[in-house]
Structure formats: structure tokens, C-alpha cells
Image (cartoon, rainbow, N blue to C red):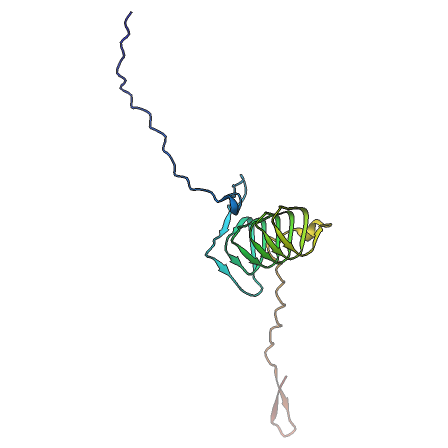
Length: 187
């Protein structure tokens, strides 16, 4: 029996397109992975520097810092890259420190990775310190969840001061005098 091959007139399936990949710097920490239903990640890059008095950064999603921040941070999840420097208080649900922090850290889950350098007090529910991490300060376990809860919506708005009472128009009275003239009084 002989088999004949028919020529196929259908177009050949497209070859899969290779997407270029870039190497991941694992020393800077794992790349943030988006979770379904959460806010997009925010990144403060290595060329970014923020300085000022009484500045608080609030982020409802995940925040990765690779730059220099001189401010307080409140976020759900914070990753501090190995080249980052943060001077200020931190409050977050989860904090992964690979870089430098000068200030208190309040977190439910706190990890000081081997490249971390922290000068400040730590208040957490769960604390992990990898070999090689540097920590100078006090550490205590949070007794009240409210003390480690980040303020993501900012401080409560202050009520507006009461409006000043509208100025009443001055009243004018004419008082008759005995000589037949009138004297005008303003009140």
C-alpha cells in the first residue's frame, strides 16, 4: 500500500515569540509580585531623593524604595532595596529591609535581611533577622495591633473653625433734641 502526502494549504501556526528577559538582582530582594485585587506596586527609584520637614508618604498598596527618603512612611507592604536609605518612622503590615533605615519600624511582619542596617526601635508581631543584618536599637513584640497599624488614609480632617458671626449693619437712631434739632446716634 502506498501513502501519498497531500500538500497542506493551511498556513503554518505562528512560532511563539520570545520575550526578552532581564536579569533579576536577587541581592536587592525578590521582585514584587502583584496580587490579584490589590493596588499596583509603587516604586521610588534609585535616583529619587525626598527631603523635608513633617513629610509623610502614604501608600495603600505595595511600595518599593530604592532611593533616599527623609520622611515617615505608611504603607501596606514595604520593600527597602539594598541601596535605599530611609530616615524616618515606618508603619506597615509587612516590611522587608535590605538597605538602611534610621528610625523606628512598626510592622506586623518584619524581616531584616542579611544586607540590612537598622538604627532604631522595632515594634512587631513577627520579627525575622537574617545572619549578617545589623541592628542597633530596642525590639519588642506588639501587644496592641493598633500600635503597628499603618495610617493609610492620613489623619482625620480637622473640623472647620466656626464662621465668624456676620457683622450686623450699624443701627442709626435719630433722637429729637429740645431745640428742635435731631441728634444721630450710631450703635
